[in-house]
Image (cartoon, rainbow, N blue to C red):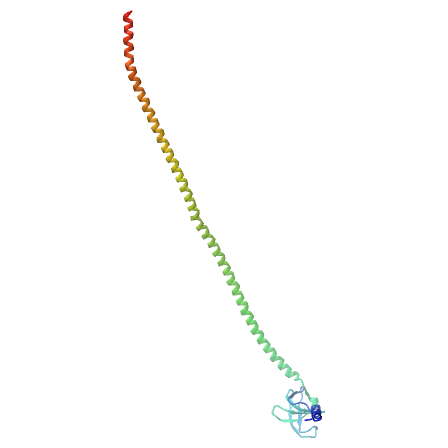
Amino acid sequence: MTKKQILLSWLLLCLLVTTATVLAETRYVVDNLIITMRSGQSTQHQILRTWPSSTKLEILETAEKYSLARGPDGTEGWVLNQYISPKPTAKVRLIAAKDKLAKLEIENNRLMAELKTVSDKEAEVSKQQKNLSRENKKQDEELNRLRRVAAKPLKLENENQRLKKELLELESQHELLRQENQMLGDSSDREWFLNGAGVIILGIILGLIIPRLRVRKKSNWSSL
């Protein structure tokens, strides 16, 4: 295909687009109206059927005053452009809005239910957290108590070791004192023994000397 043929094809396509509308365009019959669908583009043509307000029509072709449309039942014919609109009628929009509102309410209820579930779970988690915190506090207190209890035997053991050491020292001191006392007792006994022996010897000596003194004294008196 030459460039000229391609250009002509494009021009023909553009011309077709300007004179007719692409299929599947949707238009709606305006509010509070019943329109006629005719076999041609004038009031002289046969009426094929009528369409009430808010009827959805498929536009097949658009001309200056009329448009070729297909109805919901498949009937095709020409309708006046002034009686159709590219937007749904207020009634259709109201129904759609109500339907959308109902869906939004359902979604809102669902979200509210999910929010309540999440809130309940959060409250439960918070409650569990508080319980765990209290339990943790109790365990800390019990642990500290056990540490104090466990420290007492160690303290008692240390005290017991100290007392044993002091007892050994006291026993050693007692033994030293006993030995010293025994030594002092032995010394006192020897001293008493020596004193007694001295007294006895002195008595013997005196017993020997005194009679002699008496004899000499008598002798002296005799010589006089």
